[in-house]
Length: 246
Image (cartoon, rainbow, N blue to C red):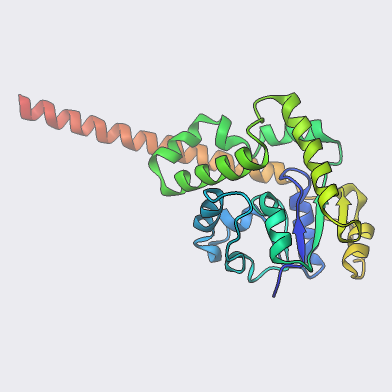
């Protein structure tokens, strides 16, 4: 299996619904959830952390993560769309856009996947868990740093970056190999682009915000439990020291 579709669109541009649609069309797809949820992909986070700590444009053994997939959408794959175009020259590029524009994309991103930067409880996970350290390092450097240019704390700059990025992709990809796509467009443009029959069913409309919020809430609860555990250990240590000194 080789990569045939390179998703260049940012996370929070309908990538979860597009992920489901591609899977339905027979294109097993890669998405951030394949990195952090799919237990069969042990080691993928380490791979992407290595990518994040390598110079932009560096090539890696992409088949290590994409061997079982025909398509990739969302982060972290969209962060290396140029590198993937070089590695898979026959692949097409799918640029997903938020149906309601750059401002809506920004609001959605800040409310969900930017939690690694704006939710203090994630800092606890970084401090206390290997997963937190690895995921925080990877997302901070590859997604928010390299791809979003460190502008997410400034709405106007982030919106401008989104629009500039769209122009960059359009300028770099031959028109015949590029589909600029909104999930509100439904099946026809995607199926025509991929040369497959259109399913007789509605286009997926996944409530990914609710799912992401559930994941975030689970991480927050985990951080509280860890803090409680640390507090207990400190109390026990202090008690033991008091007893010893007494």
